[in-house]
Length: 241
Ligand SMILES: [Zn+2]
Image (cartoon, rainbow, N blue to C red; front, side, top):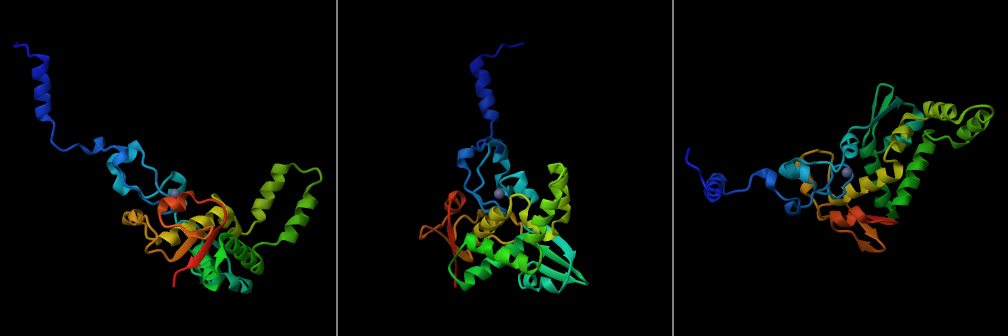
């Protein structure tokens, strides 16, 4: 058998290598920014996603599993729910009410922003007002129950019972990532103009040009997905006309 030199072997190897790089060789550094369709934050590129970057829609498993449209609170409908039904995401069928939680939060946010220049804390306040009006939240009752429970009961049992008694809508709104972050991520989606369609093309929206609202931090408008991702503290929301 003819013995080939290492150099000849290397040359033969090189001639077999196609001129374009295979997808698996795409460097993380070459990937352009994308937006998470749930939380509206920038998706940080990871090496394992490099070959499949254009189909990545969510920044995390949590965002994938809690994506808009996924969480619907269902409960028996009654008169007092009229306050909730004024917003998108709320549908009534027979005597049941269904609330698509992410859509509903966006709708309340848009309404608050339409009436005044508001902060995201104002939006949270408005949601709590609506929930009390619809008797989803009944603070005085809960406090009394807790007091009655406190004698000779273990904390876990009390927590379990409290959970059972919680209204389905409040349970949904308060579930991970919690109401405060739920409002913030709705605001980011609205600022970017990401809608509830999970088309991956939407993840390429990375500026606020086509957004429905403006988000401001200390009077300065946040204009990119990076700005929105890392903004902390009080954010003001202004609806675009
Ligand atoms: Zn996310």
